[in-house]
Length: 211
Image (tube, rainbow, N blue to C red; front, side):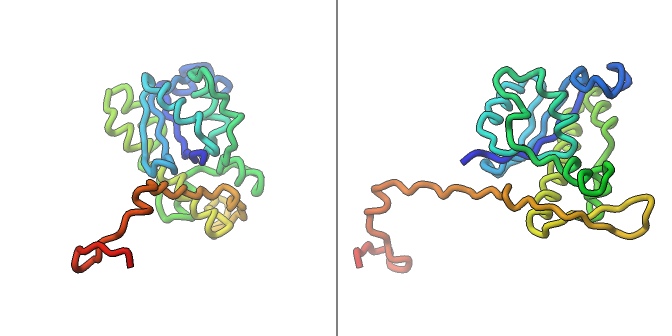
């Protein structure tokens, strides 16, 4: 079973420091945060740990993110030696929602309406944490975004829609999505052959019986 990974990348630089939004590949990674469905764990990787993250990507059957294809992939790809990110099946939530409504929405606008939750900070906070060497704060900020993204994705799979708010309209609006094909089915652990054949103990007496 291929892993499913929810991804978020934080950077060392702002767009204004690298020449503008046309150069996301120059921003450099400060931290990668992800949720692995196979491991059922939230993980972080600093710039020096990217080879370990690439090893995780090699077994990825799906990457879930928010604005992943334009931003996160462009920042991360220069570091990767063997994996081409566009070759991995993806669910970019921002892209899929924008394809329906016709404009881009923020993670916050979807999270507030869908989950009654919001981001714990701003992208510039992440850059400041990195420059201060406050990696604990950076990891918390990044994984908070990963958790929001995962939970929006799971809501969409379950309900066939996600919700959003717009500054142009007062009511909460919905966007239909079909992510059921992206369901992750955890493999059952193999039972060793000797355990299959071994008699089991009675739960009260502790005695073993074949009957």
